[in-house]
Image (cartoon, rainbow, N blue to C red; front, side, top):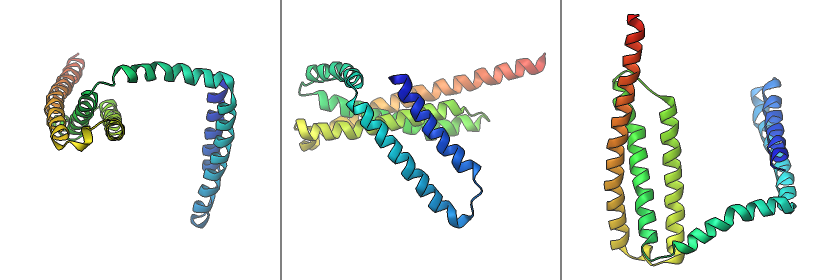
Length: 191
């Protein structure tokens, strides 16, 4: 079932892109064609989602994924959990945000750049941001954390401190990687 689903999604996406790239469209028709393609894709994906939602196998797989997460959530329902989660997500935003901007400037100043590191930092920042939003939403619904300015400010301060430590560590790792790449490049030039 998973292979079929992945294959169907791949076929739909590739056919939409092939159709969009293969047609010579004037500027006036671009918007209209884009809307038509988006509408067709949405309809196809809705039909696939309906089939998957009705599938017993998909329901079993979904339950298999969610059950251990629910069990873990029940174990993490102690009072300080939302404070810790907020601090960790805040640390991730600080760390990945600074690495994405400042660390990349430092690496760029050494005439080097790693696109995989940029993508990794963007992904970490996105995950931390989504995590912070979900943590805050869950805390607002399930605890008193968001109603206590002292709790929010102390968690943010702890997250800032941890985020700065991880930023400095990450930046030093990137600088070491640049030195290693430059050392390999110079040794291959010498040969």
